[in-house]
Length: 480
Image (cartoon, rainbow, N blue to C red; front, side):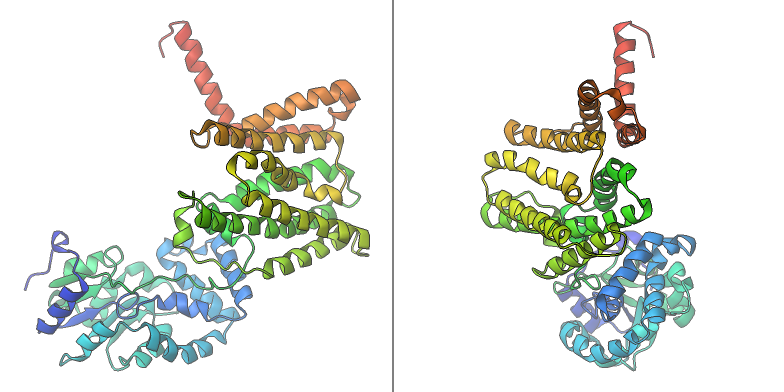
């Protein structure tokens, strides 16, 4: 029988796949993850790592470093993740072996397993999962004697080569050409499907991809994965916008700059842990009471832990640490602790009230949230006059598009928020200079804040410059 061409690869329903298996007389190759096993074995292995918080932090740091860029790209990412956990948390493998029986009981694809076991010969289990992880799971599923083609855990070579090359090396190209292949992935297994005699691309209704450690709470996960997915919001919206202004508006008055920056970073973590809880509450209120809630698509698909009390533990712990560092690692002044706890409680209460107001009234509560984001740290840290102007401009630049959005009814305006912030800062700084003297503005803090505003607005300013040039040329009739 000739191999199927890529044009012949088509979707096969679960019922048709089971019928084809019953009638097939040649070799059978079966994918594991989300096919014979209704979840992802690699993610479930990583989910077994304990302590979960440490494992999640390590994997997040690995995602930031992206070492797979030098070993073959995203296809080799899991090799790095598994090796990291096996090296730093070596007891995970023992825990995985204990969990395998429970996972096999709950997530074996029973109809497919029964169809395979009813055949005379054993199927070949072909997977890009890792042999050390897959083997105990298959044994618990009743396929311990089945031939296994899986990635070796000693490097990323198998992941780079792909499943077809792995199977042909282990079983021979002739067997592939005579085989029936069952898989859920037309992307990863396209070459294998194109090379076999009977390609069955089948999506099983109970199959689910569940990211590892989604039950472990980590601040910032909800904002990054659900509220603002794909926007790099922690880096752009929190670190560059909020934290950048926190530092620049206050650093000149700090006695110990490094302690100051470290302390502010801990206060930022403390504050955003509570502010993020407001986002969680906002989405839940929208689902309950709004006819057409504006939620990201990830709200219904991504799994992120949103416990009620753990954020407060994080917020209090990071806040106390931040105060301790800011005060020179000598003491925790009770008044400072009381001030910061009051800020957290007030922010939480304000967001809670905002979420339960009608949309017209929210316009006037929204600035309170932005003031909290921009200036919460000022209850513990002094800021220069021009720094206060910059924080105020930051608040106004965020409130203005929200005001237009609520009252225009035309959706969120496609404005230039960073250019708006630069304009507000320039105007308010001029008023400050006029009333308090130019020395209050013409200093290193003012220059740094102005430069930071320009840097944040650089792309918008380039677009404005291009649009202005086009208008000038057009008004003079000059051909471009």
